[in-house]
Structures are given as structure tokens and as C-alpha cells.
Image (cartoon, rainbow, N blue to C red; front, top):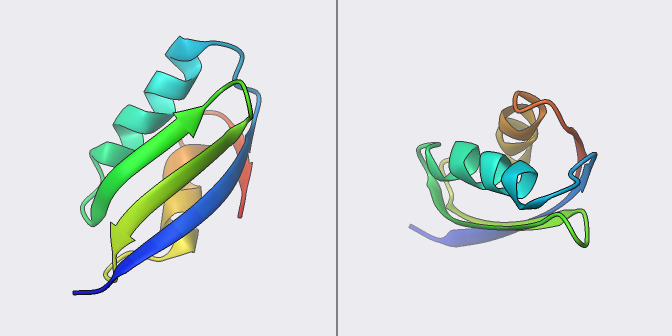
Amino acid sequence: MAEKTHTLSIDGMTCGCCSGRVKNALNATPGVLQALISHETNSGIVITDASISTEELLAVVAGTGFDVRA
């Protein structure tokens, strides 16, 4: 299955715990292969297989309490 790379802008993260919460939620999502999240740049790069959409990733991040857009 082909891999996809998604770039996300995530607002509201202020510390490593914030980015860790987002990273853990994404890594627990089926189809996510790797999540690289930075509170310093308010961004994330998520590598997935083809089974998950950007919209699904946005919903996961929003569920952690942060504003997110692709």
C-alpha cells in the first residue's frame, strides 16, 4: 500500500506535553505509520498508509483539543 505524507498546522500547543498528546493520539490511529509533531513550530508531519484521509487526521487532532488545518 502506498504511503502518504500529510502536513498539518496545529494551533494552541505550548509545550512538549501538548505535542506528545497529539502524537500519541495520531500514533494510536489505524493507518498512521508515523507522526512527527512540534509545539515549537505548531506543525505536524504525519505519514500514513492510503487507508486514512487528511480529514480523519484533522478529526483526531481536533479531538485532543487543538485547532488544526491541513
